[in-house]
Image 1 (cartoon, rainbow, N blue to C red):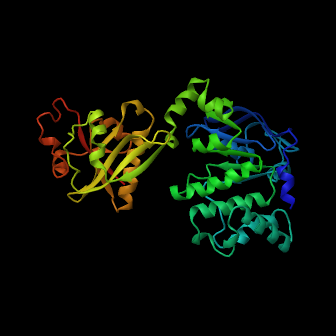
Image 2: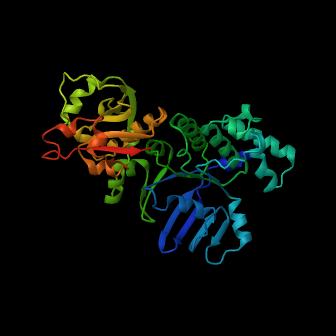
Image 3: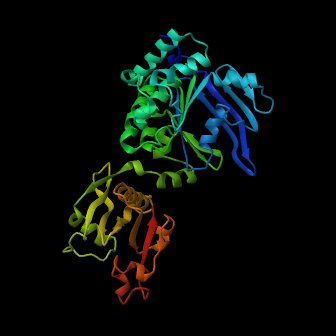
Length: 404
């Protein structure tokens, strides 16, 4: 099969070379002189906070966004941003394929014809050859049995696998994957990651923008950390995740390790009481589960299996209420509180909630998550806090609400 020539990694020549790449949107310079080399067969994961230029870099590599300055080489095609022609851009694009967050499938075509479309329209293949190649790559991503289905009948994970097959079928020198799992529900993420793992094992050259840190650590040969439009640090997964040198990298990783933790749902409220007490919440070991308890949200550290945080979601007095948000002291500052609250909101939404309440000991934290303070009259059925002599007299707790 002609795909095999794309998997030859004996040549160590750089497949991609990026030199002094700049991109500006109005007054905002998003890319500020990017330099990067990628070898054939290498998998590079780009990590960093939102708005640091990661996706823009990928879009510039495929000239979906035209850089303002710099030189891009993919395979044997080199383009200078300041004097490139339309023909050169078309040639460059044939060497790469981009996989988007949102699949970009043709809704009026079945799975097979979605993959065949670029083979016929761009590569000018005849119908039978295009069909054979499309079927081959659909089999590679586990979608060979769904060729006659339409996108609307597929799960998000299945749609993304079709998009990957379509990109592979044009035999690109490099795959550009922009947050390929960010639009997926959690249950579909792993099936897409498994396809990408398989491609990595076959030495497809890939640049992956991802927030899945464990996945990046497992699959990539090299990690690139971007911040404020520049490459701050790059190295092997071991170097970046275990021994980062730059302070900005260290700060990002400290706040970006949700994949080291997982959330489980239970009804074990009493078992969580010692943690609530340790973190300063006013509970006793004899406390009963709150009225209308729907679920407990537990944060579990994957490595140890220990519970390190959590909360409870209840439905009482005709409202949804988040109770007892707590993170063990040693694990605070890692974004786990936000993780718990967002999970509670998602759970409430799934049960039909349009607004959600909580009692906040640290109101400013919840304001950043979109909660607003409600007046005592509105909160009278939700909490008895306002009856306490310490309410706003030594205790800064507030009853808060968020529309969802």
